Amino acid sequence: MLPCCAVRTCHVLVLVLCLSAAEDFDWTKNDRGSFYYGTFPAGFSWGAGSSAYQTEGAWDQDGKGLSIWDVFSHRKGKILQNDTGDSSCQGYYKIKEDISLMKELKLDHYRFSISWPRIMPTGIKSDHVNEKGIKYYDELIDNLLENKITPIATLYHWDLPQVLQEKYGGWQNISMVNYFNEFANLCFERFGNRVKYWITLNNPWSVAVEGYETGEHAPGLKLRGTGAYRAAHHMIKAHAKVWHTYDTKWRGKQKGLVGISLSGDWGEPVDISNQKDIEAAERYVQFYIGWFATPIFHGDYPQVMKDFIGRKSAQQGLGTSRLPTFSSQEKSYVKGTCDFLGIGHFTTRYITQKNYQSGHGSSSYFTDRDLAELVDPRWPDPGSEWLYSVPWGFRRLLNFVKAQYRNPMIYVTENGVSEKIMCTELCDDWRIQYYKDYTNEMLKAIKDGVNVRGYTAWSLLDKFEWDEGYSERFGLYYVDFRNKNKPRYPKASVQYYKRIISSNGFPNQREVENWKRKATETCSSSNQLLAAEEQRSTAANILRLIHDPLTSHMEMVTEVVVPTVCTLCILLSAVFLMFLLRRHN
Ligand code: NOJ
Image (cartoon, rainbow, N blue to C red; front, side):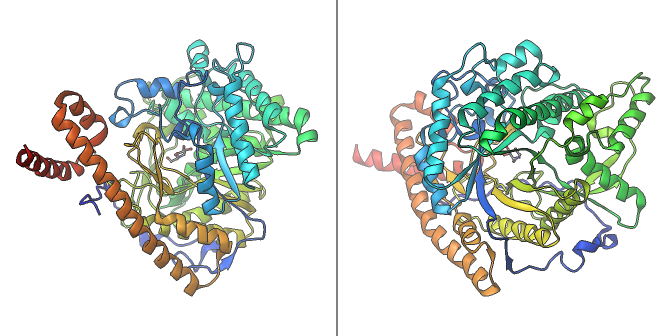
């Protein structure tokens, strides 16, 4: 093992002191802590996921156009350590290798996204269609099918063609509806004979809020109080249009399904006996998943969003609400445009009521909600600072979806946990625990009657984690980003997830306990192999440093030196090697 260690950021937002007041809803009485042994319905689909910009690399190869993420990540200071997705996992060149990893896991499905600018470099069909890009997805889909893995294709996982951003302002502009529809139509035409599960948009909440409100994500706009609502409005219309295109032009022949993937945290009232907290928690979820799901299932925004944003806009002296409105024609066009609902879910918050005064310039999506988010400091948070492991929240969210949208067919399109560890660690027991507990809560939700048909672990590989660069690793497989070949290594969670899949659930206590033991046994030897490999490459880099101080210094800074922890190991090795060299000379 390398003498490296884990560095974690411990972020606790607020200490929650009134937990004793919180009690379970009816359908979860008895079980926050208990484990349910049993299996999933026959035919339940197990998978893992990825997205184009996060894994493909090859950002400027074979005729691909620029996306907003290519441009955003190249701007200094936007991404942690100025990382980019330029080469990422080199997934573009590793179709066969990655499918063998999926085979190892015995996945039923693989969720990936199609990069719009890879197949339409400017985003506009009449400009140019890039056949090389199409060929890549053809190969990926064919290889998946040859290996009996069902492809689930997302049409938009955040990589808008840059030209559309520059010319029209991206999702701020209604013209995106038609451009996106043309792109989707081309995908149906070229891949729809083989792809039967389509996801129009991935996590539009994030696109709207982080792309157009806070500016943490591409395109990096900070249009507080209006940008997110407008972007969301256009995305909802774009989704609906694509669903109608499939429904009228392709469904008859292709017999597939079109859904959307919405991400949302669960919001639990801090004080379950306080009506204000109960309402605030409901608002939290309505402003999250409800913002998109309510128009798609019921034809309009949640009443609570219309009320709150409308009232606050009026208080600001605005003539109309900052939340756009749907005409009655649009309402019926948007309503019912979902064959299945994709749910991405990672974490939970406690919610309490908090009033924000609306004044000029101070309004935002966040203040419109009139609430505060809290966390329990006892919740495990192994990775991303926002990601606390709260499995019971998953069951509650799934039941909320069942109740609000008349029990739609659900595919869990993202669920998983990251780690913030600077050095190699394949023995990810916290991820095992997370997957075990979250999938168990999903099983309980199915027993509650929620119509969940499949589950997608997020993610297959470590990858580019947006503004966090490569610092947060979500993968079942570890990727060595310092090595140009981007080799993959299985973490212990691969062994564990594989067992859940092959047993289609959790057969009995004895067996399930054995899984963890076995998974951790195998990982420690792989860990050692990888550590030895890393030691070799570190030594080679240090030798280069000694022979060519200037260029090697650059590499040390960008490639070798992992901030903070590993510095110590490297310095010690350097001293030792110099000592040896001196002796040899
Ligand atoms: C949701 C996004 O869709 C995905 O790309 C990202 O990796 C996860 N959140 C984790 O942050």
